[in-house]
Length: 225
Image 1: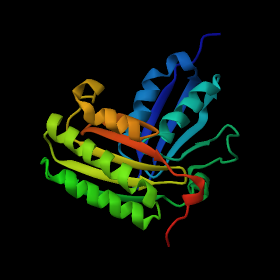
Image 2 (image 1 turned 180 degrees about the vertical axis):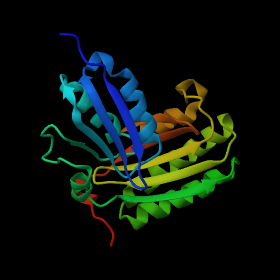
Image 3 (image 1 turned 30 degrees about the vertical axis):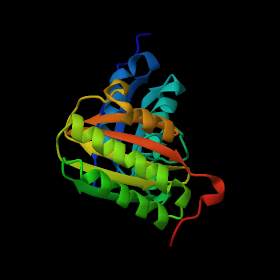
């Protein structure tokens, strides 16, 4: 029996994004779906809700890959609904079950090397506020290098993002250039690589986000009030 083509529809809500799938979900046919998911994540929704009621899941690897990509920047929660997944039958049920959003600070920056110091100060203050003093130094250095990289290669307005969840502190710089960063562009990204547990970049229609995740150790995982 021939397979039913996989199709999807994206609905962007004020907080979350809903991706509705129809057809047969097969890993070999999911490349376009992954690119759509990356575009959705680049807009930093509070959650990604994947509706499966109209789809036939023939390969669980696709769902695991969506979760893997969302777990990186920006650490977006993913909920699958329909088809008996996670016990949720509607988008409203899934929204009610989502945890409270993590701490997140954003600051717009000019395309100037002087903003690297400002980024360090913002990141250090965030680490101290969230009771992560041991990450203040490494995170501030990562923020500085990401800003310098954006000034050198994007030359657009930037937004610094500092975010934490239960396991990671994320430091990211969003700029208006779609060009992918590369290790060959200088020692800055090599420092980011050495300081972080993992790092990467996510493109979106307005440019890209270059991000790094620093591990939060269990004994320091105390949230501020």
